[in-house]
Amino acid sequence: MASTGRLVVALTGASGAIYGLRFLNQAARHFQQIYLAVSDQAMQVISTEMDIAVNPRNLSVERLLGRPCDNITLLDRKNYFSPPASGSFRHDGMVIVPCSMGTAARIAGGISDDLVTRAADVCLKERRRLILVVRETPWNLIHLRNMTQLAEAGATILPAAPGFYYRPKTIEELADTIVARILQQLDIEHKVVPQWQFTEKE
Ligand SMILES: Cc1cc2nc3c(=O)[nH]c(=O)nc-3n(C[C@H](O)[C@H](O)[C@H](O)COP(=O)(O)O)c2cc1C
Figure (cartoon, rainbow, N blue to C red):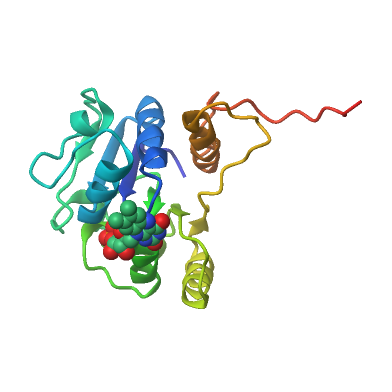
């Protein structure tokens, strides 16, 4: 399928706001237009984990990224007239990063009760890429069953399980091991982390 240059991104209330924000920064360099939805609970987690005080009244792309970004459109997550709520709106896929178990459960159950879950539901029905960067530990049987259900329906389950073999020196570098995997799933060439080269130990 030809690329549309459009991507849908959602931030939800799992731990790992850093993944979402660093991914957004990268994605904005590669996609012409990004449609962004942020759950209320994501704002609480962002405020807890990052040096960003964000709430439904002051939410903006500039506040989230620390700079204006013309090609990211912030969506009202209760507005089902929004483009990603309709299957007729073509895009290259959707990334939910981080993805809470609550959001994963609602998508697995077909409960489209906000724009995040509706847009994800549309991705599955239209056979578009849906990448869920899930985070919880440990996983209970309900989490595991929901993720199996989602994988069977066509979603990619990309756990926020960073790789240490790159020897990351900062939290940002560690987070970027996940950002790189998301970009790879979207067929984006990047230099976020070096491609792994096999070297034999002496
Ligand atoms: C600081 C903080 C961290 C959280 N971390 C997680 C997590 O890692 N995974 C998860 O599934 N829920 C986590 N939660 C709980 C979710 O935020 C909660 O289930 C919420 O209803 C998710 O809503 P949303 O999916 O609409 O964003 C966390 C909550 C807080 C306050």
